[in-house]
Length: 378
Image 1 (cartoon, rainbow, N blue to C red):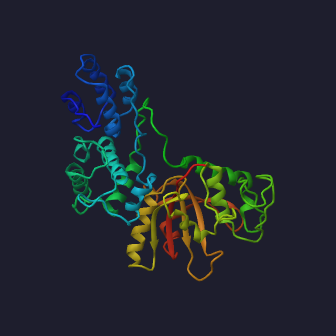
Image 2: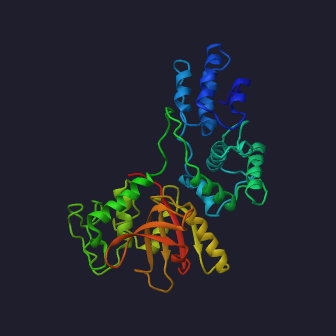
Image 3: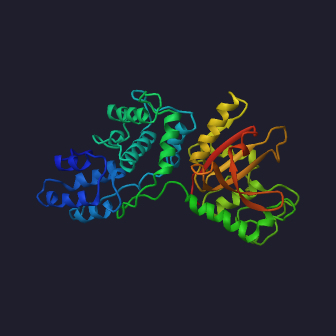
């Protein structure tokens, strides 16, 4: 049950950032009984994204005995939540009075609080009820303040443009190490680990992922793979971008998409594995270049490139009727959009697997562009 926060705690929250010094100053109020353990629990649960570096340890230090302070890790990305990613990819808008799902609303509330703290924009924060999952007046006001400050239509509703801007700013303002607060692990596989797995596969046997090469996979569930990383499975004379991409996900600790018999899907069918609540992928965005003007398609692809994180998967569909080799799979290993307009992608090429910096022009001639995120750890 929510508890009423004391005036002492409210004052500490008033600037939308909670330093370890401010938390330490609450110690005397706790000893006098002015601040209860339940308040500290709620402080962590609903306002944890307002914590600055080190504030977690200080909160644990002042908590009364038997008080369990738990908080999710500082919010990193809207796309880590399947429900919130629906807003990123434009299939849902969240607004007051329209039954906004609690799970998705909570992610955006946490994002607003996080940016209010990290960018010193208290008007974007939810300092009343905090991040509680309810889309009420306070959330609508915070969204309007965010939209006004970022030259977006001021509607108070969280639409695709608002979500993309929030995510782009989260990319530029990484979460601090608040430290010491125990909570659930990141809900998606570790993207840095997936990116490193892709690099390791390139270092170990790049040529085996070239068209002339013979495929060897680390995944024991692949049919015929008797000794992982050693058995020659085949695929000689075939493009292996999908095989490389799915092997990277597996080696990086993610559950891989696969057909009923265990084989990996072809590239153009990989996006289909983002459908359903337990799908192994989350769809962050989808652009069909023949729908709307070329300028609109370019703008959407560029916006998605800007939010691509290490471990994400980029799929394109090539123009034409070919199916088996009608698409291409890439694993994001770095994002340089803010500096030179490119995204570093690991991928299988004609002769070997390699890493290449991809610009907007790499994608605008394709029929479709997808940005996906691994959703399930194995």
